[in-house]
Length: 97
Image 1 (cartoon, rainbow, N blue to C red):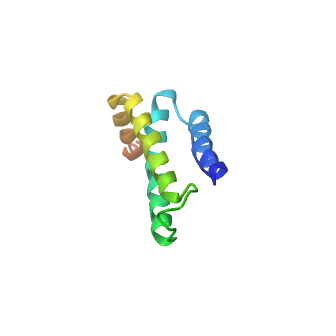
Image 2: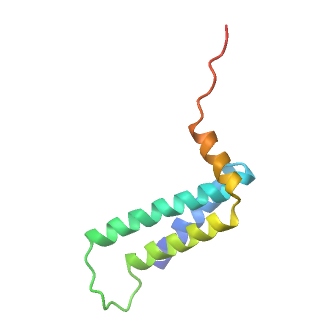
Image 3: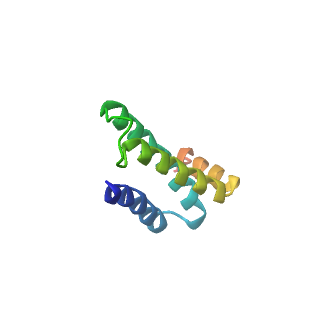
Protein backbone atom coordinates (compact mmCIF):
# COMPACT_ATOMS: atom_id res chain seq x y z
CA UNK A 1 0.00 0.00 0.00
CA UNK A 2 2.87 2.34 0.81
CA UNK A 3 4.44 1.58 -2.57
CA UNK A 4 1.18 2.55 -4.29
CA UNK A 5 1.15 5.86 -2.39
CA UNK A 6 4.75 6.54 -3.40
CA UNK A 7 4.10 5.77 -7.06
CA UNK A 8 0.92 7.85 -7.16
CA UNK A 9 2.84 10.78 -5.68
CA UNK A 10 6.14 10.53 -7.55
CA UNK A 11 4.84 9.65 -11.03
CA UNK A 12 2.72 12.82 -11.47
CA UNK A 13 5.60 14.92 -10.15
CA UNK A 14 8.02 13.51 -12.71
CA UNK A 15 5.50 13.83 -15.54
CA UNK A 16 4.71 17.43 -14.57
CA UNK A 17 8.41 18.30 -14.54
CA UNK A 18 8.89 16.93 -18.04
CA UNK A 19 5.65 18.04 -19.69
CA UNK A 20 4.93 21.49 -18.23
CA UNK A 21 6.72 24.78 -18.04
CA UNK A 22 8.56 25.29 -14.72
CA UNK A 23 6.15 27.93 -13.40
CA UNK A 24 3.17 25.61 -13.99
CA UNK A 25 4.51 22.53 -12.21
CA UNK A 26 3.41 23.33 -8.64
CA UNK A 27 -0.15 24.44 -9.45
CA UNK A 28 -0.69 21.41 -11.71
CA UNK A 29 0.85 19.04 -9.16
CA UNK A 30 -1.30 20.52 -6.41
CA UNK A 31 -4.51 20.14 -8.41
CA UNK A 32 -3.62 16.57 -9.36
CA UNK A 33 -2.96 15.62 -5.75
CA UNK A 34 -6.33 17.02 -4.69
CA UNK A 35 -7.97 14.86 -7.37
CA UNK A 36 -6.03 11.82 -6.11
CA UNK A 37 -7.18 12.63 -2.56
CA UNK A 38 -10.78 12.73 -3.76
CA UNK A 39 -10.39 9.31 -5.40
CA UNK A 40 -8.84 7.94 -2.19
CA UNK A 41 -11.80 9.27 -0.18
CA UNK A 42 -14.30 7.70 -2.58
CA UNK A 43 -12.45 4.37 -2.40
CA UNK A 44 -12.27 4.58 1.41
CA UNK A 45 -16.03 5.19 1.59
CA UNK A 46 -16.73 2.20 -0.67
CA UNK A 47 -14.32 -0.17 1.11
CA UNK A 48 -15.26 -0.38 4.77
CA UNK A 49 -12.24 -1.05 7.00
CA UNK A 50 -12.55 -1.07 10.79
CA UNK A 51 -11.59 2.23 12.42
CA UNK A 52 -9.23 0.55 14.86
CA UNK A 53 -6.98 -0.79 12.12
CA UNK A 54 -3.26 -0.59 12.90
CA UNK A 55 -2.30 -0.57 9.21
CA UNK A 56 -2.28 2.34 6.83
CA UNK A 57 -5.77 2.88 5.40
CA UNK A 58 -7.11 4.71 2.39
CA UNK A 59 -8.08 7.57 4.72
CA UNK A 60 -4.39 7.98 5.52
CA UNK A 61 -3.63 8.16 1.80
CA UNK A 62 -6.32 10.79 1.30
CA UNK A 63 -4.81 12.84 4.11
CA UNK A 64 -1.32 12.43 2.69
CA UNK A 65 -2.40 13.50 -0.79
CA UNK A 66 -4.20 16.51 0.66
CA UNK A 67 -1.22 17.51 2.80
CA UNK A 68 1.23 17.30 -0.10
CA UNK A 69 -1.24 19.13 -2.38
CA UNK A 70 -1.60 21.94 0.16
CA UNK A 71 2.18 22.19 0.49
CA UNK A 72 2.56 22.43 -3.29
CA UNK A 73 -0.12 25.13 -3.39
CA UNK A 74 1.58 27.11 -0.61
CA UNK A 75 5.00 26.97 -2.27
CA UNK A 76 3.57 28.01 -5.62
CA UNK A 77 2.87 31.64 -6.42
CA UNK A 78 -0.76 32.77 -6.92
CA UNK A 79 0.07 34.20 -10.34
CA UNK A 80 1.40 30.78 -11.37
CA UNK A 81 -1.93 29.19 -10.54
CA UNK A 82 -3.74 31.91 -12.48
CA UNK A 83 -1.39 31.33 -15.43
CA UNK A 84 -2.08 27.58 -15.26
CA UNK A 85 -5.84 28.09 -15.23
CA UNK A 86 -5.86 30.67 -18.02
CA UNK A 87 -3.66 28.56 -20.29
CA UNK A 88 -5.84 25.49 -19.80
CA UNK A 89 -9.13 27.28 -20.38
CA UNK A 90 -8.21 29.86 -22.98
CA UNK A 91 -9.70 29.65 -26.42
CA UNK A 92 -7.24 29.86 -29.24
CA UNK A 93 -7.92 32.66 -31.67
CA UNK A 94 -9.22 31.66 -35.05
CA UNK A 95 -6.70 31.97 -37.82
CA UNK A 96 -7.44 34.57 -40.42
CA UNK A 97 -7.47 33.53 -44.08
